[in-house]
Image (cartoon, rainbow, N blue to C red; front, side, top):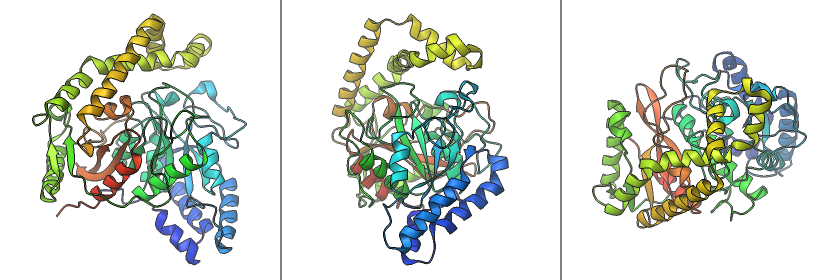
Length: 450
């Protein structure tokens, strides 16, 4: 395990709250001390709400003393990505267009957590509208490096030990990549399993709510609280949701996904670390299947990583036209080049072409269902290596589009190391079988180096 050395579990602290050996207020103060010590170099937060957080922690402390916590997240300090509405803190989207903008209500995910006693510490930095290139956040493990994006501040806050968990989003790779770079756990559930109400949109068919946390237990607990308290319209919700981590289950068969990026992007140390993990899995009698062993999967991979990727980005462009068209027309000078490019592309597209893309997407999802049907999950990297040095971009998305565009659940675990930095291992599961995927991840996190 190569989790951030600063990572701060909550699940263990909760046991101390229940026994009276610790309190939510004292736990929060330790988080605040870390924020005060490291925020100047990491820049994880846009705004902080510490007075309200302390009041919420005091209320949580009283509930624990009375033996009546509201839920398993009662007393948990949380960071909220700054594209999610909060009634008591501005929501500024990482862009000057929304500077100082104050929603009147919490997003459903924030409301769900607060109603269970979770404590919102502040709003975390995002790239512009969760789709930009850069921002001021630095990797807490090496500030010369990017923390990843777009959920940059959320991952950095968890990796720095400022909070045990934070909310993110993923439209391409924006939860799992920063989790990988910052030595945290990341979870992107099946599309629609967690509600996006009150979260600024990019692409209706690709936007996912995500969770970044210091432990798999905390990751699952936060996702489950949101799912149980704030259902997602049109979706059956989060399969297996509950406040107990699904029992570890050894996979019988995993498909190993390397992709062309294995030869073009992945460094030698990451190659060796991933190969070492594969060898440990073989010794534990896990069948590992590659494209050489399964013609159906090879056909799926060729089809997906061919023209389909760019055509899926066209889906993003078409679906983000509104409200970004309005931003371009009224405040275009304040948008990044990427937003202008996507809106320009959307203007070129017809409803007929979009309908064609949706048919193609449905066919690709069915092809994936068939090709993955006999495997427990897909095993791959969460990023093509450790966080790059520099801040001009947030990293490659080569290993992240498969699960996102096919709307499959995925979990990143900080199991590998390269260049002294963590690299996440990604498990991709079957749609609407999130609980099964978590059980596999629970087993995988125990497969340690010898």
